[in-house]
Image 1 (cartoon, rainbow, N blue to C red):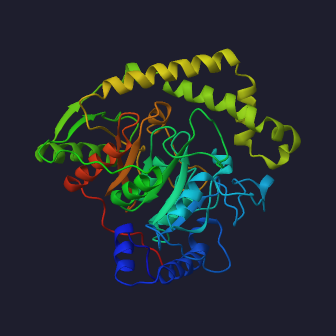
Image 2 (tube, one colour; image 1 turned 45 degrees about the horizontal axis):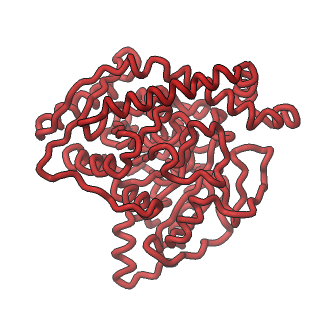
Image 3 (tube, rainbow, N blue to C red; image 1 turned 120 degrees about the horizontal axis):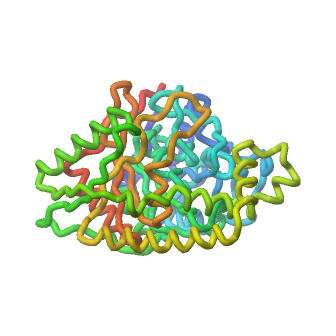
Length: 420
């Protein structure tokens, strides 16, 4: 079965006379063939969707089931909304279609993007989680079913599954991609993000979606990175070793790597995130908690109950501290191209009951900073390991330019998941 190509490969094929529909149909067939094994899709159409025209013609996209599509059901990962058909596409979907991209299907999300996982399996080892909440999007890209996929992140729901599934995950700055038609979990933290197998694909798609021009770093200037070393008592030895080896490789290639200490800036971040999400979730899901409690998971029920116990004063204080820490981080990052950090504790955990720990993703979500997860290694068990680059808030395309220069020194993994 053919695999999805990169945007550049697809554009070159079409320029050479390839029919966009001839590129889309085999990938719909691939999705159908692999679905029993991966369970990446909440909905696949009964026949191959029509290819569009434009700069993204022939490019297949998986759309997280949290994001509205008028021609496909959108259930938000909940039985409460099973079969729900939105009246209009989300704005981000409309933009993709206008560019010629083809929505291949709706990808699995955890329930309302919170912690109750769906059935999706990790393409590298079906006994391991793909991460979440954008589970199906990361898996579908890793499996070569789609070139691009849409995800959302409120804590770590793009960066972490990208790391677990061995793909590039990009969480832009807050509000950089539109959220209209995306079911909210926490308006103060919700981000729309992108998955692909190459940094160039993310850069091309993001630039087209935002009508911005890709940027480039000055070729003669060495990379200048702040390095936030992970705590060795938390991350796996393999993840820690990858961070250290990468730091040495970059320094050997001429990059300027400066260790940073950020505990003063990050110490309240987990509490801020907990307060904001719980308070807003109680407003969003409180009525469902009363009307259909038997159709909500214990994870979401507990979140709503925690939000009801959170005062408005505590919520306002959390917003104020978030704004203060965002400014502090922006100042701290002056003079650096990016901050180098880990995206996860280590490889994807075994089992499907949990989507993993978001502690190394949440700070940059709270701080509204763009972040990109890069798959640069494999664990001894053959599962992907990633690293994360974080930029200043608002510096999305400069961060992706930095990521491309980073990959020139530290290449992405070249192997593919062992799929049937």
